Image (cartoon, rainbow, N blue to C red; front, top):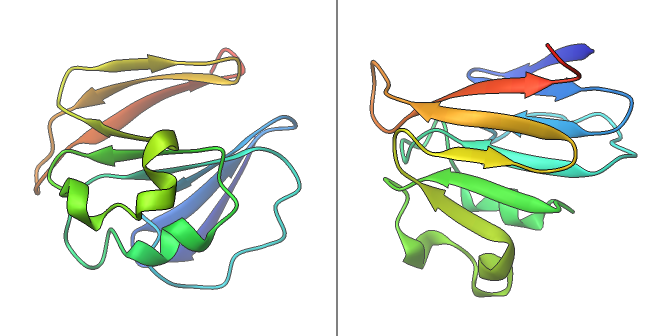
Length: 114
């Protein structure tokens, strides 16, 4: 597992099979050659920007503090807005949403049995 700091609150977590990008709003991203999923914890401009919808992501998981109208229309089918205490699972990862000391939510992620 590799964790790369991107900028401010944004970081990238990669395994051999998948990449998770957290709270991206700007910064230089490395080349990502595996399925990418983007997660945003809340609506503050230093945790979310519509630029994420320019990324070639397989899915977007956003706090419900990010309004539906902020989700680009062509990405709505692969975007899930989440509340606290929800669980998401797919072939690569599992995570549960928890509360936050700021706004929105946090993510407890399980990747590769870690």
